[in-house]
Length: 154
Image (cartoon, rainbow, N blue to C red; front, side):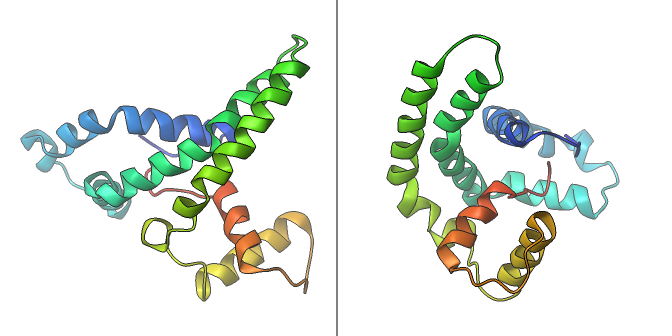
């Protein structure tokens, strides 16, 4: 796997594909011929993520929360009239987020949004949206962070 410029939904599709390929990824990194290859820092970070069960649980929880919204986006990007389906999927997306709220707030899975991570997120948010010196609460920033969430091997 390698990094590539993508659109918003493609990140989640890549995560879904990685989750489905978990057994193959684990088999690859444990293969003796793979162990003999030279590895840079990025490859080492990928190997660490692949071996980390918390990483896979975090991907699963994130995908569970956003999957109905991704289905709604597909209908929004098509030329077929589907307002009834979009309305239904938006309601499903809201329910999925509500059901996943506790898991998305789990600091053991996603880490804490305090300190330098929070400041980096605020800086990126300000750069993207052109805002400065505005007050935001941690919970709103935590969910904004998920929108731009990156994993090492994507």
